[in-house]
Length: 478
Image 1 (spheres, rainbow, N blue to C red):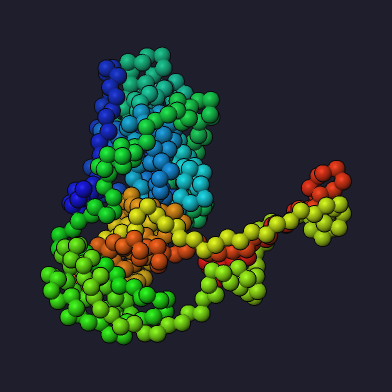
Image 2: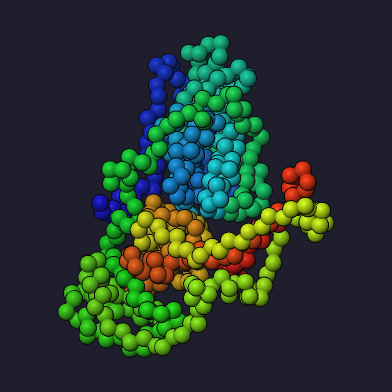
């Protein structure tokens, strides 16, 4: 499948709003507490963490839009977040659209690694959706002239409990406008961001949607090959690129024989210092050129210890930084009292994250702005990296997350985005970088090797009275 960038939606899709068949009150004058008045600003308010509209909005047709600043790396988070928001707002699951990982439309909530997709990102959407419901019920209360505690909500329609035919929809109350209401924010950006309002979320015994089975939204498109991946993005005038990597780490190109690919139509060689690539209007020509280009590389002897000596190297290496995650009591005293000590040591090899396919990204860096289409696990941080790389203010760069071949850990998706952005800036054209399988395996960021030692002290009754767990490896930070 090929996806033209013009087909990528910037507005939300419309979901089916269940009709009750009852008379709805339509409001056209008063938006109610905290909401923007009709005829006010048409654009969405600034994307800031202490405003409800940064998390939840209501479309003119009653569709609920949830803005989720993480990504769905295959965990089904689009479906899970949709359920959470639908539950708290008392709307049908089908009424919720989840906008994922677009830096222009969502806050930076960090990655979804470490099971934080629901535990942290989901908690924030739950809190803010509950607050949105509280405000909407308050608007309905004023519109219907009935206290809020005498109202019920079903599928986005607020009804008087004693007179169900008296009702008003979320769409009529605020559809297409904004809450302009504050929420409490903990002052943190990224994974630890939390926000909440005055509303108290539902108790588990009140759930109608959370905990129930709903088909995952992403699976049909994946199974039937109809889902648009980042690999499918196409822009007018876009060039396809393949990177040329050294055969040995540390080697740089000395000479590049451009005549060796002169017979391949439309191919250009791009060299930015020691970064080397070939680009062409047709992808297959870029692939052919990458295979045929003759490059003389400098000598390099990186002095790697080799896999057979790697773990001994780790054992002997000086400690650069030591971090104690948890310590309780005296370890030495505990082992001194033990009648038996059980210990073991484990060697973890260097590992490639080996996503299902090699990385891909598309970048368009022109006229003082940049847009990056990426499937990296942290698109907001990719945006910051690209801004620094191409010399633009962060607010002039937009990262749009899309499904890709994988996002586990620090794989090569981020690298592809950086390569695409730098090439696009140099060439003045949109550039699509897709790595080759061998390139992804050889050059992706690795999960580092480590040596793990565990030991336990046991007393005469068989109770563990001392336990030590130590990991030594290469730090991704230092």
